[in-house]
Length: 130
Image 1 (spheres, one colour):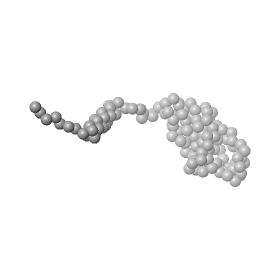
Image 2 (cartoon, rainbow, N blue to C red; image 1 turned 135 degrees about the vertical axis):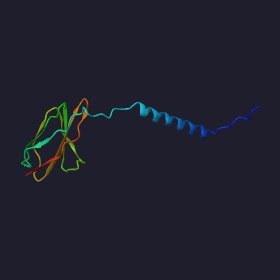
Image 3 (tube, rainbow, N blue to C red; image 1 turned 30 degrees about the horizontal axis):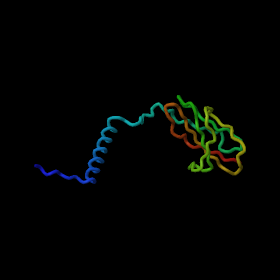
Image 4 (cartoon, rainbow, N blue to C red; image 1 turned 180 degrees about the horizontal axis):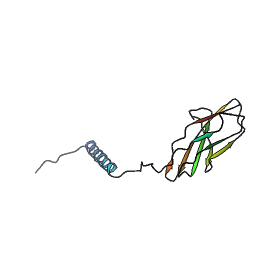
């Protein structure tokens, strides 16, 4: 009669963990979990400010890339957008701004969205309120 081989519980757990990791790495290579193809996402809009200074009322507008269905315009008083607020969200390609404080500079950037995804942020533009 053969002597049974005893396997500790920790060795069994290690074997199971390695088996699961090997299985997951094989599945991941064969079946992508999500698509990374964003070729159908809209291009970045071009942000347009007619002036670099204004008296507290001005218009921010942007181009409409092919396929874009909506836009998000962010505003901040710093060019790092750490405290950005959504100044506009919708399908228009402009925002009429008013009531801004004199002596401050406002920074803007916009993103285009569609069913296929979203664009990168536009280049930042700023306007100084005088």
